[in-house]
Image (cartoon, rainbow, N blue to C red; front, side, top):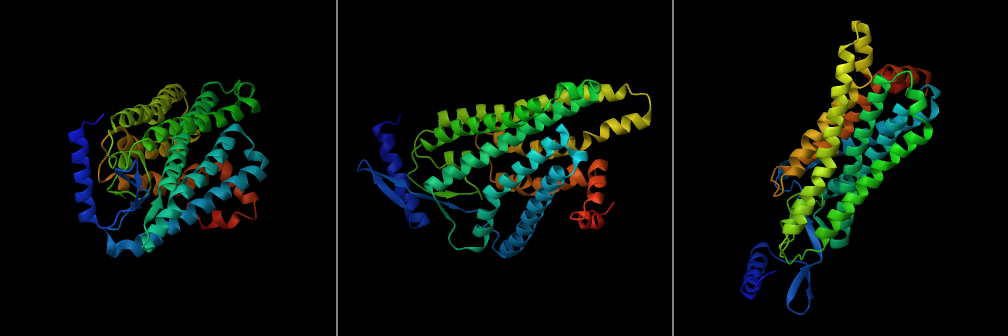
Length: 340
């Protein structure tokens, strides 16, 4: 709790910030404290000369990501060969990816070409809740997919009996419940902070650390909750994935033939690549409580680059998917245009 001197100092700081940064959208609360009603997403406004180039690249990436993932969903749904738990999880992952990029990229594209870079208070926290909820869901879905691969490699004879339809549907639903529950807690603690100004976020999306750094009330509890949530959201599923892959690698190393090793590893190599790309940046961004000016560039990795690569990594280098694509007239052009 702040002392009277602390409150006076905060008001003086706010007045100074308003005079330096220009107009600040705010309302009066309790008659003596100004509260912001919107935030300004600075995004990449410092790179003025590259705005159009960034817009073009990110728009192209968004189109490729959505189109590629829709193609995966259609293919998995229509091709009986792919009606297995592994491809059910990949299909779920594709749906998740479309939702994840759609929460951030359209707003970023608008930000890059529009003079209006503001987002309402409610819109900001809604975006943050969805963005983090989907991101955490992705972390746990990757852990579920690692479990699936471990079970398939270490218990191939009992895999079908264990991985029943009921079980893999429950395993696909669980990450969504975990993800949005954790995100709800962090969003509530961050939304309860007081925001008196400045209202400029050095990011392209409303996220926890940038918002907490703008609070004029003490964000200590919110930051502790965020740190604990980051451990639950990224470190825990990451450790689970590592544990499963240690078990998988140990099993593969005992296979005598090189052909058998290659076949076993090919079923999980794509997942390992995607998990490494996603966790590599997500852990760096969210484990540090104070954040960094480079967080928005790292965030581009797991919000734009990784989702674009996933359809290619997960499917088009997979023999079963290539075979299914060859049978599909609708997707034959995709295969023919893909190198290798």
